[in-house]
Image 1 (cartoon, rainbow, N blue to C red):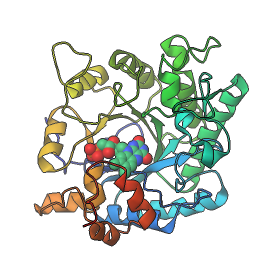
Image 2: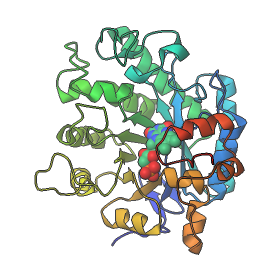
Image 3: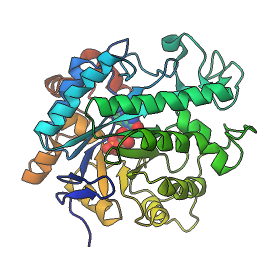
Image 4: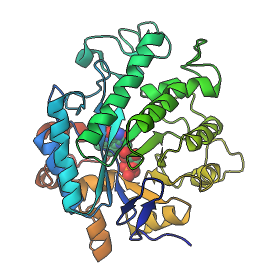
Length: 367
Ligand SMILES: Cc1cc2nc3c(=O)[nH]c(=O)nc-3n(C[C@H](O)[C@H](O)[C@H](O)COP(=O)(O)O)c2cc1C
């Protein structure tokens, strides 16, 4: 039977229920402090989304290790103070009958040298030039082990903050995605080469979290299904082979960041839809979440009918933190580009609005 947006969802293995299928996609908005302390504006905005009816909230990409920072206002989860601050997210979710996760992140080749004071790191060295003014340093084996620990420790801190789980950010050309990418990862030391080698770090993180935390703690993994924009090397066939490994690791959901949930798969000569290909690959063995151009009731329905169990709302939530409530009541949704006044009313700070302006079509031009 095709699920409806308002149907409950059961994470069977974890024994947790969502009140509906509407998920707040992870959205960076630069509203935390320069030292990574989660900002009041960031937590207030997430609270607004909890009040707005989302069944599951996924906090923005959150730093787990020094050197991995990508945005000046990016939250981090590396200290006791940051852990206590995230407890406010748990509280807002629970007051509204929602669950809350945060997305654990390391910028990899996309980490910003000016924020980190060092060159970015990745699976392999890249000489300075072009997109990498300081080049990229190859992580050593011991550094990879430290990184795995950093992700696991951040997950333990998320658990300590009462959060219901974490999502590992393995999409969008950040570190975990860099290791999965055969074009970037040509290592020959067991952390690269075959798919199993390229996936070894991601799988070790999942395993480490499972070993240290109760089974009720949710672990999701976000993946890019294929290459997009300037990112090369991510191929659907490889990502679907990875799904097999993640299913064996007993992850709670897979989150495909589709860009457009309704597009044709680039690698399917027959022009079949990307969602159909992903759905066939996952084959119901683990819950499937998708994000990308799910903007209203109709597109949510279409994604659920196409095989998604959960739909993540990105841009539409920025102008409509109460998206699920509006959709349920059949109220009109604000449409992008969102007016500055609307964003200010939703609690976006001037720095957040500057960042949002970097996404084409998201924010209205000042008149
Ligand atoms: C302002 C903004 C910030 C984003 N931040 C993140 C992030 O922190 N982590 C992530 O995985 N994706 C991030 N994304 C991608 C979204 O989660 C989502 O996949 C994308 O916006 C497509 O969905 P949409 O068409 O509903 O906007 C961001 C997107 C936007 C517009």
